Image (tube, rainbow over all chains, first blue to last red; front, side, top):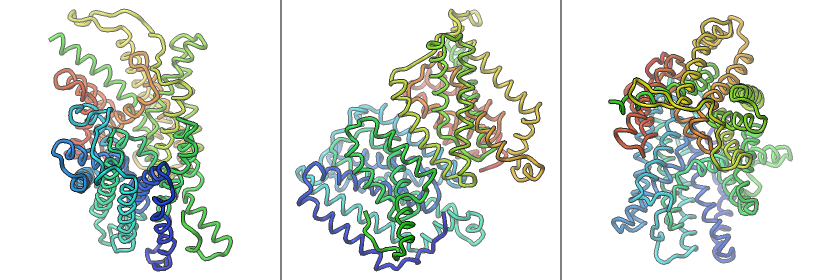
Length: 323
Length: 287
């Protein structure tokens, strides 16, 4: 958790690898094939989830266990509005985002002033409440059967879903990058590094933390809403702790507290998941062991490893392909 | 009237075991400032062990329970040594590591023990007539007695022994305790092991009544967390009062309001405590 000045990396040059990756992704629907395009969509969902969770955990030092729950709030809000009122998903998703943001504001205002441990406990409890409500309110949510919802836009097409997901992921990443470079980002890190010092210098610690929590919750709501309307079946898997664990593992394995880490971790684990699918249920166990190994021995994650490797080779950091 | 008394009895039995489990969380929080998110998984492990030791080794219920708790205690020491010690001073990483650990254990149990509920044989059969109004299972009454005994033993150690004095000193003020010659590393190791052993004790006592499956641990952990927040972080008597309150509220709520939402009452309590009295009933310090 070293303090890095937000303006220490030259802005323009750093963007180049990202633009290259974006250009590569834009060509995916032309050659990747239906199956892998589906994986790419799921991968982009995880990119949004892991990057926004990392904004909170990696940059303000608060561990939320409700990130998957907020994705579920986004998905179920939009899905229920579409099913009950016939609202178009493109209108429903923003309402889902607003619902996730409002709930995170309420939760954050309730427990963040008490300190980090309380946020972790309360978000875990919230996640469990949501699971109970979804299972009990069977008439509205269809419980574990899953809620059938309309496709996001027009007729079912993976290319449409992919481009929408890609646009949303790009926007989420741009907003995170912009936030981190802004004064607010500096305050995020001040709050993470030394709460007392930040407080004494006039940083409104609680308000900064709640802001980060709300922004990150809203992003999870967006990711969940789009993902639900891509799957066209919203199940309690979206707000589950299993999915929460995957998101956390992606951020930890990719490298918490770095901008690129969660993106690398999300894409890496999604591709890995496709290859070890044959091992069935073993794959969560493998992921969790790998994540534990990283958390214990390599807290910098893959990005930290790559950075150290580049530094040892004497190459200036910032070059070298991302993902 | 007899219904109400039965719900109250249920509430007390469950509440005391909630208290026992929460004492383990509270001990670790008070000494180390670490919340063990794998608490419930260690509870389950002791439950599985007690079932296996009884069936595979043919041990009687009491040796099987003692052995199961001892095994979880040793595992707790190992976990502290290998995983928690490197995170000292970084609360976020200890949260993340214990959360990952809970996922590892859940999935490992699924492979090792299978998805079906498992339980050790009952210690005792039959039922007793309580208050001349209703019959109540002897197993549950015995569970209550054993849990009360373990809690009493814990408070005895806490107030009558050198170790107890160290624990109370460290949870009041870590730095002053270290200045007065307490070795923090060894106290941390022992506190984590004992915290896990208390989870295990709750597990072996409750498993004959509520069989364990690989995923029930999340609920066990959450219940313990709610009790700790309700009683006040780091307060041991708060755990006992908080556990009893939660056990009674859940059982009365499920009986008179809505049984599908039995576990929701705990969370309602959590939200209300955070709103009205964030330090908890007996909390002096805020983390």
